[in-house]
Image (cartoon, rainbow, N blue to C red; front, side, top):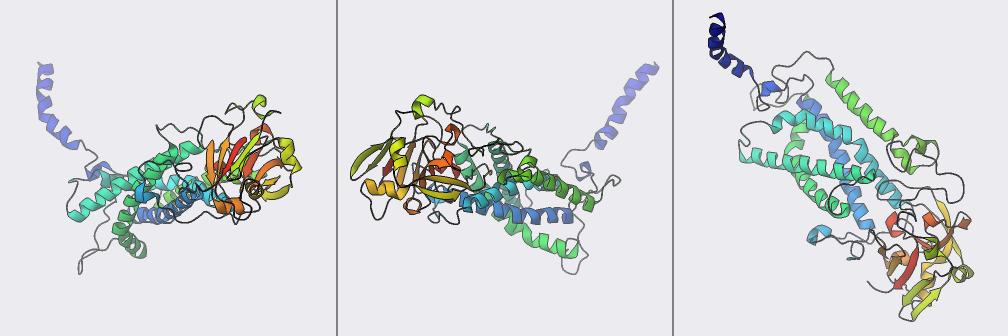
Length: 433
């Protein structure tokens, strides 16, 4: 009987228990004392500056590929107006791409803790009901969806590409391109809607109420917060410390010496490259793309084509031509780069003159011995061919190119992305593309 009475009394207690349950849509579900509009506004303004820099340097990276030379350099389907071409990518200063892409990747890595903290700070708003209280609120929610989805996609694909673990189906180049425009749409809309409020919050420290009314309560603060174990300043300091740690352990991949050894979180940092004139970073090795000694041995010939016909040269014949030197870095889309290396070889403009372009060399289509993989064929614009530092390099730092650096011959062009500095060159075709 006592047991029956206990079972019978359960329904009486169920309503109390059910009312105690909270869902993410209930403001009381979120109890951190750190959340607040000022905390979110600080993170938001940091992201405003950082994400703007990311988008600008991303556009510059797109321009550096000379996308108007499609479908060779840019195979993005259906890009339409989104693939507008700003200008011909210059060849000077010679470290330009090293700077812009280094900033793009480094700032992206450093912003990861800030982005995660910002998303954490506003997550209660994502579950707020009703989904839209007005047209303005609906626009804000849509912009937030585009912003959060676009940002997470861009950061995730970018970080995986940097770590050489790109797992998404389809080309990184194409998906990152379209993801950037989705992100920008949400970013611009969200900034237009929220920037005035963020500025007011940072100036006053509290949200503004209606005219002649007291200041409104903090909409992000927990109504029933837990006891504080960390202040908001302390939380911001932790976010900053995380960003600083990522900076120290990644930025060195763009520098030589001790800083590179600290770049433990990037594939092109943290390890010594060994001694010798060819001991600097590479992206693709000869073995990885199945380039064998038979491909690059005595039977190798460079084919050069133009309106005057087709010429073929052995490596010895190329070495017998007038040689020129240029101190240029290698800079990769993954964000790593080398310091200036001293390259020596035949000017591209001299090769163009041999096949019918003595005065004004045009674009050139470059083909590699590499038989598969992206950018085994690439194009260079006429301004790049004309630059006296643009070489078909045969040597580097006083020694013949190693197989991994493109032996028997490779392209080296100032300020160009690494993938356009084609290795294991087989054919050069000069002419308008």
